[in-house]
Length: 156
Image (cartoon, rainbow, N blue to C red; front, side):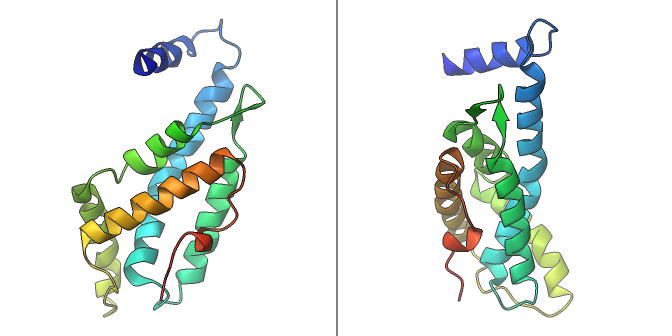
């Protein structure tokens, strides 16, 4: 039932009759726009940790993106719900281990040129860590309690 409602709502918001359509569609667009880079950066952190000079930069960028996403409201007062965050931040790019492996391969191309070896190279492990991290992040985004990605990751 929820899926039918989402489909109808997504179609309905493209009409002029629906005033908050711009707000909701804009919110989903912003979420979608950030999800890929966020997932790539999280994979970099989980694969390479702080063995590179870029660790803090990646964390700051993720923090900035998630803080921006946390502020998103549609209809001027309604926050995005957990399922919406989860759909765009988790299911959009990294729901399956194969998708994580593809992104890991993309990330590792840049680092192997510099002779940098990953701390973690197992896609199943990265996938599980990402699922745990993003589930907690999505929960905190809905309650406006996200602060820093460093609170969710354990890096050596």
